[in-house]
Length: 354
Ligand SMILES: *Cc1c(COP(=O)(O)O)cnc(C)c1O
Image 1 (cartoon, rainbow, N blue to C red):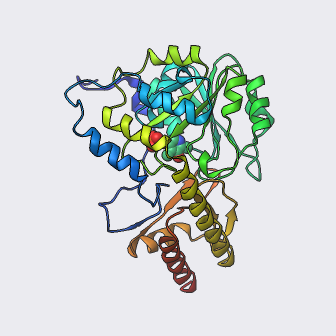
Image 2: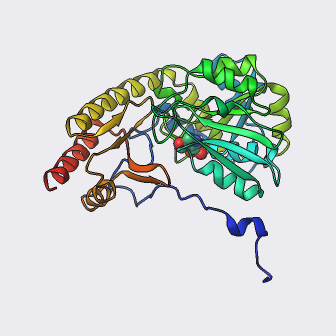
C-alpha cells in the first residue's frame, strides 16, 4: 500500500478508451460518430456573441436557458423535466452515482456502450452484460432482476449495431424491472421513433440525449436527461454546481432551436448511410441495417483488424471493435458523401489485394 494508491475497487477497473482524436485535418475521420458537417450557423454566432458576455460570473447552475428551449422544442411539460450536463457522459455518471452503490449492480446489453461498465467500476459496483439474441433482439430476462439490480442502461439506437429495440418492448421491460431503465438516445435523431413519450407515462423510464452527434457539437460538451420532475430535482443535488459552462449553454440553446437545420442534416446523412450500406453489401460485407449515423459491418474474410490498419495508413480512420466471446467487426461513421466514397474506395482496394 503506497501513500498514493487509489481506492482498492479502482485497481480492478477497466478504463474506457475513447476513439482516437488525431490533430484535425490529417485523416478522414469516421471512427467516433461525430457529425461531418459544422453545427448550425446560429450556434456559431451565438458563441461569438457570448464571448463578450459575463464570463467573469459563474454560469446559471441549472442551464435554465437551455432547459426552457428544449422543453418547448421537444414538447415536454416544462424545464423541470430536464437535467443538463457536460455531455451525456456526465449525465450517465450522475445516474450511476445516484443509483448504483458499492456492491450493487447495473445491467447493459452486449455488445453495447462499454463506458457504462467503467462507471460501475468507478463506483465499486458491479455490472452484468446480457448478450443480444440473434438479430439484435433483447431476451425477456433483460427485464428481470433482484434487489441488487439498481440501474439498467440501453443505448437505443444501439452502438455498435445501430439497431433499435421497439418502444413497446422498452415499456414492457421497464414494467418488470425493479429499477430505472435508462434509454440512451445519443443517436435517436437518425432513427424514426424515440422514447420521450414513455418518460411521461413511467417514472422509471429515463432518456438521455447529447448534442455531440446529430447537432455537430461534440467539441462543446453538452447533453441532457429527460425524466420526471421529482427525479430531476433529486439528481440535480448530486451534480457539480456549475456543470454546464456559459458558452456551452448558449451554444446548446441555439442548437436545440435549430430544428430545420437538424432535419436537413439528418436527411442528408441518412441518405449517405443508405449508399454506404449498399456499397458495403456489394463488396460482400454482412451489413446490419442502421438507425444511427454509423454502420456496423463484418466481412466473411474476417480481416477486420487488417482492413482497419490498411485504412489508417491511407489516412482513413474507422473503428475496429473486438468484443470478447462475441466477435469483431468494423463500425464506420457516416461522413459526407465524399468522405464516405473515399473510404469505400480504399476498402475495395484492400479487398482486391486479398
Ligand atoms: C457518443 C455517445 C454518448 C456520449 O455523448 P456525449 O454527450 O458526447 O458525452 C453517450 N452514449 C452513447 C451510446 C454514445 O455513443
